[in-house]
Image 1: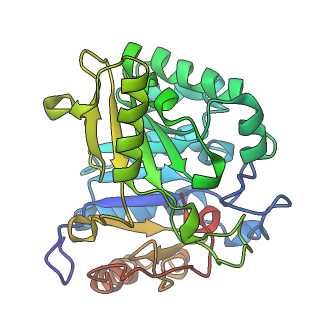
Image 2: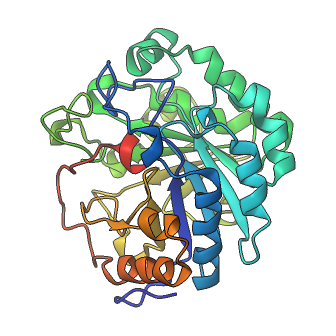
Length: 333
């Protein structure tokens, strides 16, 4: 399945819910966003049907997101159903990790291939500040649970925001003694810049991946540690836009995802499906295509046509667009 720019599209990110047990300051306001009515959210069987159609058209990889996907009832059964669809080669998930201690083993048994865990600070007080209601130890316990369940790789996603003054070397050091793959993500202009969806995006808070890389190596030298070197064959499995490095002898890696300073639009291989059943060709675009209507009409030909329209609408580039009508929690993280 190729788009009009010749890119192979084989990856579908699916938001299971717009609900979350955190209220991260860069994602949504403290009171949360206006939640979608339950009857507008795709049902489990509708998600399975969407994946079945997508797989028939060439989608091979599925990532489940939110909101927080683990708050969605029936998520383990959903993973099992999706993993059993012919053509689907892997099912992954992005989560804040809080519910993994009780669910990781069941998710692994159901066929979840790997997990990405969102974690933006290793300071307990700052964690409470960023999430507004979470406790750092909960997410750390989730990381332990993911490793214990046998997920490989386990990736840690950290959004770098200049005003938060995060300890980047402390994050990078997580990769040394355990097989954890830490990825720093540039702060992205998703949601209204006025702050309707969170603390508000501004260019002054963006830290380029080049600056992060240099800062980590400078901190490492000051601490007597070796610098990061290209990871080579040590890169974790799974398609992704990160550039990977590693400390010599480390069990894991340190990656950098640069959607702004060095965008990867030319290699984009994904579509997004929102929790209310809209296909989005691009994270930074507000163009959406209604798949829910075709799913509820039980019209498979119409469902394929919606995928085809979304595929044809994929832009060549995000063209530095700032702000989207919907925030990340509504689009799917």
